[in-house]
Image 1: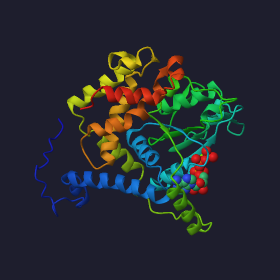
Image 2 (image 1 turned 180 degrees about the vertical axis):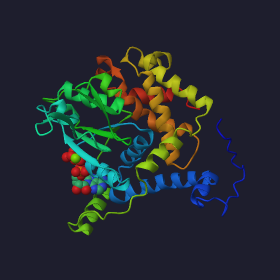
Image 3 (image 1 turned 135 degrees about the vertical axis):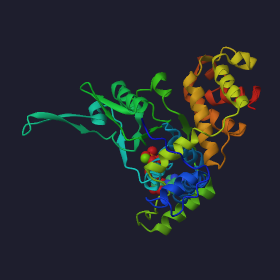
Image 4 (image 1 turned 90 degrees about the horizontal axis):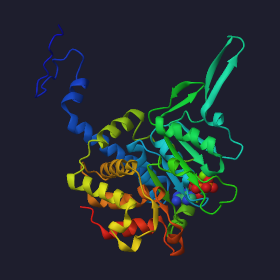
Length: 353
Ligand SMILES: Nc1ncnc2c1ncn2[C@@H]1O[C@H](COP(=O)(O)OP(=O)(O)OP(=O)(O)O)[C@@H](O)[C@H]1O
Ligand SMILES: [Mg+2]
């Protein structure tokens, strides 16, 4: 029979524990631990703002994706700090980072790695490809053909890579930020809907303001060609995973759960919410979008220092969660409507409360 161990409810163990105080402090001080974890996440956000001017949406979404274990699709013109932002994140969380340029001649094995025969040992050994990093930047994802995109899809969905019938686990922090250039469409392979659904968020970037652009220039001149200073990161992999567990416990009220489900269902039958949208949406979002919106809202609430979700978290994230999951009828384009306009109208015509 196993001995029964009783843990005192008020842990006054100072000096009495043979292994020393640290474990006791951890057990008895969970609230302080929780505060420290949340403060570290906010410190991470501030650290990112120290190397990137503006682009708050991108920086918030990067942290939200990191905290929810999701992936990002980022659409933006060249030079809008996409690479700079994910590199800064990698530095701040002590993560390994890899950039992969997607091209038409890329093969799945170029991403996943593969079995290499070792004559000296008379056997094959798996050699890891560039996906085996904590943070992966998949640049111009729509420039590679479908079989490469689906290799990335498996990695994103399963957190593993399968080669020659054997699966190899990716790092627990694994996060993909894929980019698309909205202007260059010739010679591209548009991502199928099934693949788009696997991105937690679809972020659209815009140019910085004139004042921000001036600060970008000032920052560059002040650095005078030096590499960015290696500020010590506020988080490491273990703390990121701890923060993920805490994010999943952020309170999501009954009424907000209902609002999320209703909003996602309204993308499938938009006319039930707004007559103006009748016949304009061919396919709406899947139940995965319900989970994505809930998890992302929990992460945003946590980032903003709360342990409960507010309606405004859901309203803020709904466009990024839904815009890539809607298939519009050609009629919508003729009326000058895009997915963002549809989501805006759905939010206007219904309440998140
Ligand atoms: N908001 C910003 N804050 C700080 N630096 C910026 C900002 N926007 C652009 N830059 C600077 O502009 C340059 C280009 O940025 P970066 O390489 O990150 O762009 P990108 O979005 O990855 O472009 P591409 O699509 O061509 O890969 C970098 O030197 C970067 O520091
Ligand atoms: Mg780049």
